Amino acid sequence: MADVYNWHLGRKMTYVFPEAHPQKQFVAIFNINRCIGCQTCTGACKATWTFSKGQEYMWWNNVETKPYGGYPQHWDIKILQMLDQAHQAAGVKAVWDTTQKSDTTPYGVYNGMTITEAGGADQQALGYIPPDTEWRAPLFYEDTATAYQGDDLGISKEGASLPEHQTWFFYLQRICNHCTYPACAAACPRKAIYKRPEDGIVLIDQARCRGYRKCVEQCPYKKSMYRGTTRTSEKCVACYPRVEGKDPLSDGVPMETRCMAVCPGKIRLNGLVDISADGSWAENPQHPLYYLIKVEKVALPLYPQFGTEPNVYYIPPRWAPRPYLHQMFGPGVDDAISRYTAPSRQLLAVLQLFRTTQKMLFRFEIEEGPLVFESEVNGQPWQMYNDTVIGFDAKNREAVRLSVVEPIHERPAERMNSI
Ligand code: SF4
Ligand code: SF4
Image (cartoon, rainbow, N blue to C red; front, side, top):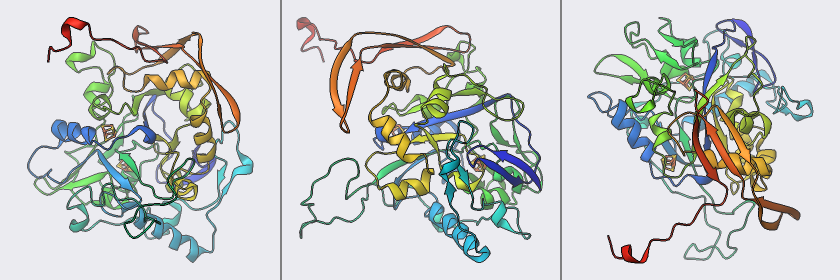
């Protein structure tokens, strides 16, 4: 075991391999507040990658309804319970020390054990292989909310109001996190799983894989899946031909993955961030992903306490109970929600960039516009400006230009009945 630095946890942790970092890292942000649960992303991924025999149950992208849904069923409850039991057995409390928050440790320091540290001498990390029944179908408990506290008909007398609703659910969008410290790679006895040095995408070498399913067992997010027809494991490949700029549509520059590019809810933003030799993100506040994750800190990692340093980030939902969100996204939740609820002038402009072009954006600029709206948010004055945000592709060419206020297009009178 080696000591490696995990910036999500604000400390060093143990991992099977010594630190080695890619030049760039594949990163995505999902804005939970905007997801409509349409599953277009799920269908786009399936139609692209997992439509063959033996892949019937493979949903590399899935969208599950929290708190009850999950694919495979109960994946997060199960691993959280295992982690909790390990802490109890060791007499360790899993707490975040938020007094140590800083620019380099944005969520403070995690004093509990990761899945690797809790694995003990017998196994590299805590984990389990879900039985077939739990993989059988996605979307169990879809759109199921927590219990009503209303009358006999189940209608709430309280109504709903922010910040937290009494009755709630939200959609959790899930793909492989292309983790900095992938548990799947650590687990593989054949060393068939590798992280690409050019973009940090985690892939399974199908020629080396012998289907031992150790990756299925030890990925805490359950995003490595076994295929009976080939006796190998498969997982999300981050649409790497698109990331490499090889898609015929791409004009030679990196493009977002299929699941990102089809999203009608415009909840997804995907790109590549520069990684320094020591593994930290190279400072670049004009990069939309760097800006949202590192500067505004509105997007947070999923279950950072697992310790794999996942590279998919979430803007947490405003209406769900905070203890549930703290468990899922760590101690950055309250700050992220308050910044998202009353966004700064720049943040509001950058949020417009989600799902507006299939090209990955590497830089943004903002042209200031007039004040168009004033209000109060949480007792504080808040202003909205009709600024224009411009996104640039990998060749530093303008790829997209949008204003904060969506333009209204009126259908001309002669086309009123043209459908
Ligand atoms: S999410 Fe799971 S399958 Fe994906 S890189 Fe991380 S550990 Fe591996
Ligand atoms: S396509 Fe977008 S809005 Fe629809 S379920 Fe997927 S993430 Fe949500």
